[in-house]
Length: 70
Image (tube, rainbow, N blue to C red):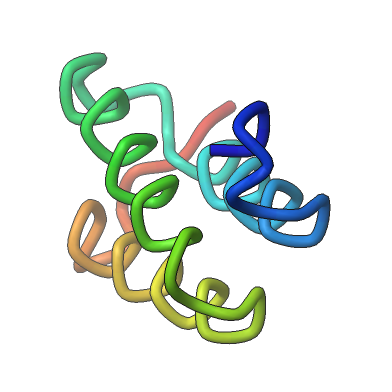
Protein backbone atom coordinates (compact mmCIF):
# COMPACT_ATOMS: atom_id res chain seq x y z
CA UNK A 1 0.00 0.00 0.00
CA UNK A 2 2.87 2.37 0.83
CA UNK A 3 4.79 1.49 -2.34
CA UNK A 4 1.65 2.19 -4.37
CA UNK A 5 1.24 5.59 -2.72
CA UNK A 6 -2.12 4.57 -1.25
CA UNK A 7 -0.95 5.33 2.31
CA UNK A 8 1.51 7.76 3.81
CA UNK A 9 4.44 7.41 6.18
CA UNK A 10 2.26 7.91 9.27
CA UNK A 11 0.06 5.00 8.21
CA UNK A 12 3.11 2.82 7.59
CA UNK A 13 4.56 3.69 11.02
CA UNK A 14 1.33 2.65 12.77
CA UNK A 15 1.18 -0.64 10.87
CA UNK A 16 4.84 -1.37 11.65
CA UNK A 17 4.32 -0.56 15.33
CA UNK A 18 1.32 -2.89 15.55
CA UNK A 19 3.14 -5.71 13.77
CA UNK A 20 6.19 -5.27 16.00
CA UNK A 21 3.95 -5.72 19.06
CA UNK A 22 2.68 -9.14 17.94
CA UNK A 23 4.37 -11.72 20.19
CA UNK A 24 6.61 -14.33 18.59
CA UNK A 25 4.33 -17.11 19.88
CA UNK A 26 1.63 -16.07 17.39
CA UNK A 27 1.64 -18.34 14.34
CA UNK A 28 3.41 -16.98 11.24
CA UNK A 29 0.32 -17.32 9.03
CA UNK A 30 -1.70 -15.27 11.49
CA UNK A 31 0.99 -12.57 11.47
CA UNK A 32 0.92 -12.48 7.66
CA UNK A 33 -2.87 -12.14 7.72
CA UNK A 34 -2.64 -9.37 10.33
CA UNK A 35 -0.20 -7.49 8.11
CA UNK A 36 -2.56 -7.74 5.14
CA UNK A 37 -5.54 -6.62 7.20
CA UNK A 38 -3.67 -3.64 8.62
CA UNK A 39 -2.49 -2.61 5.14
CA UNK A 40 -6.06 -2.86 3.85
CA UNK A 41 -7.39 -0.79 6.76
CA UNK A 42 -4.64 1.80 6.22
CA UNK A 43 -6.05 2.53 2.78
CA UNK A 44 -9.36 3.79 4.21
CA UNK A 45 -8.61 4.98 7.77
CA UNK A 46 -6.58 7.77 9.32
CA UNK A 47 -3.44 6.93 11.32
CA UNK A 48 -5.37 7.65 14.55
CA UNK A 49 -8.15 5.29 13.54
CA UNK A 50 -5.56 2.74 12.48
CA UNK A 51 -3.98 2.89 15.94
CA UNK A 52 -7.34 1.97 17.49
CA UNK A 53 -7.82 -0.83 14.95
CA UNK A 54 -4.35 -2.12 15.81
CA UNK A 55 -5.24 -2.17 19.51
CA UNK A 56 -8.35 -4.21 18.73
CA UNK A 57 -6.30 -6.60 16.63
CA UNK A 58 -3.84 -7.08 19.47
CA UNK A 59 -6.71 -7.69 21.89
CA UNK A 60 -7.97 -10.38 19.55
CA UNK A 61 -4.56 -12.04 19.12
CA UNK A 62 -3.72 -11.98 22.82
CA UNK A 63 -6.98 -11.41 24.74
CA UNK A 64 -5.61 -12.28 28.16
CA UNK A 65 -2.26 -10.54 27.65
CA UNK A 66 -0.30 -13.66 28.54
CA UNK A 67 1.76 -13.91 25.36
CA UNK A 68 5.01 -12.07 25.85
CA UNK A 69 8.42 -11.96 24.29
CA UNK A 70 11.50 -12.47 26.42
